[in-house]
Image 1 (cartoon, helix red, strand yellow):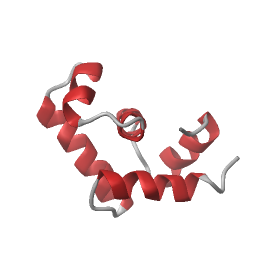
Image 2 (cartoon, helix red, strand yellow; image 1 turned 120 degrees about the horizontal axis):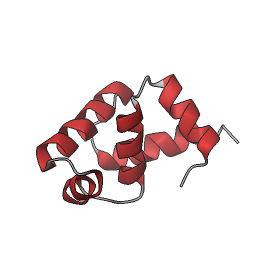
Image 3 (cartoon, helix red, strand yellow; image 1 turned 180 degrees about the vertical axis):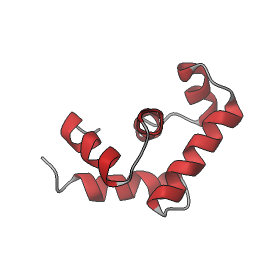
Image 4 (tube, one colour; image 1 turned 30 degrees about the vertical axis):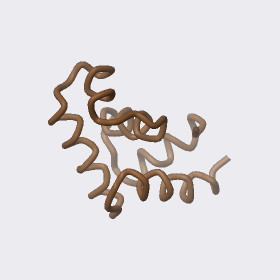
Length: 78
């Protein structure tokens, strides 16, 4: 969905960890918490917690709002 430069900007701008950036990418790819957990070899609760922390850092309230906000931020970075 986004290129490497855009993800780097998002990571640095919102102070996301490498793991949070990885999880955010998977959310943007349409994966749910169960799919994220399996892909990252973490528990469902850990995946859910990562998503919640990412949303809190960005000040959004759910997956759809997270994706829309990231699109809005990233479209200015080429």
